[in-house]
Image (tube, rainbow, N blue to C red):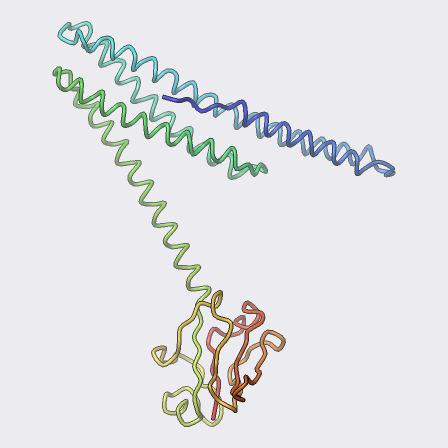
Length: 289
């Protein structure tokens, strides 16, 4: 199993801080507050250095866990060919139990590492990629352990409680993935809702018939959405009104749109600032003739 290297990550972080220090020192030349600003900068750098050391400490613990797992796997592979020996069977059980416990500990530490990075002032795509690689490495080790367990089962060295532990880890991984997918879907739905709007245009008679207009004013409350056209405000910014007379009945901030005639003399609504235009209402009602 290819191990994740941490030298490049720490070197990247140290180099970034060194560059920041040099740039800030250049910018402070000639300033009357050089010492105070330098102290402030050093405090920031010390904080980042402490955060990096904390992250690297957890990372090294995880890496050491993978090393111990590899060593235990090697011992099991040597012992399984002599599994009929009671002493070998006991050693296999001990090593397989150790592997399982160490994998679960590594999983907890990877989650801890993710939480530390998200709450730190460090924003490094390289570190995020490294954590992702650790998760991939853990999943690969899970698959290896299942394969090894199958080999042992062929030699009648199946440990019921160990099998349960492996299945538990698989279920937990599946549950984490399901939760992640659910969160992503919720975020996607929320994003879609935030960027959805409805518009309609029609004559005064048509709008009255649909219960949208009464005594020249747009009614408040729920509209018949089926009569409106649903749009994504990020994609639609031009609406052809197909009429030589048009006026907006709903409130939309001035300066966020233009209402101009085309070559046929018919009006076209062009939204120039979507966020501002739809900030008051996500419904657009236009009266035409």
